[in-house]
Length: 44
Image (cartoon, rainbow, N blue to C red; front, side):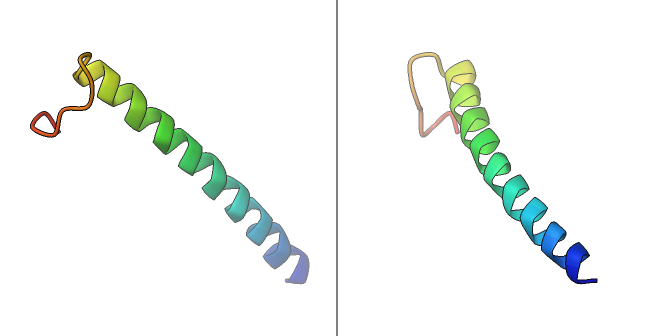
């Protein structure tokens, strides 16, 4: 149970970091795709 818990914690932290990076990249990519002129508050 100890190794599993440790492994889970490591994987969870790693996944979270990757998820944050992907989320940021996706947001930037979507913003550019939806509004080429730049971030538009009305568009979002």
